[in-house]
Image (cartoon, rainbow, N blue to C red; front, side):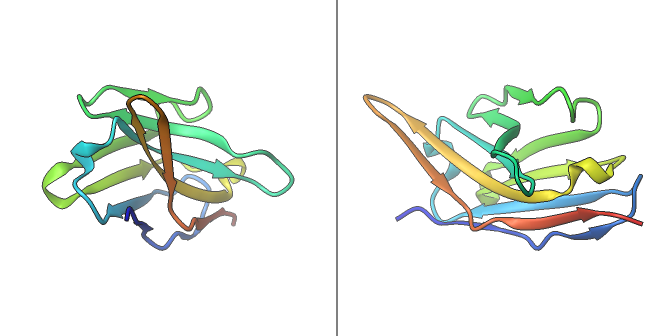
Length: 118
């Protein structure tokens, strides 16, 4: 059974940085891709960043140049380094793992709150 456990988020001042981590209970190279999504109050869940097994990355326009996604296969962990945080980055952040073969399977972490405020 796949479990994704995110690190604790927190309260960060505007312009600050925070790194989230997501540890998987299985070998992450078994997934087609992993990523981070977020959901702000009253809004739909949106993609933040993804990284494929081969290391290809994709970012939402709103975070390009500020956020960096990376993976450590040996630790079965995916990271999201968030820099130059803005109040609009406030949301619950979710780790995602996806496996695509004859069907598409998605697994989600429990979510972690990130609040950017002075």
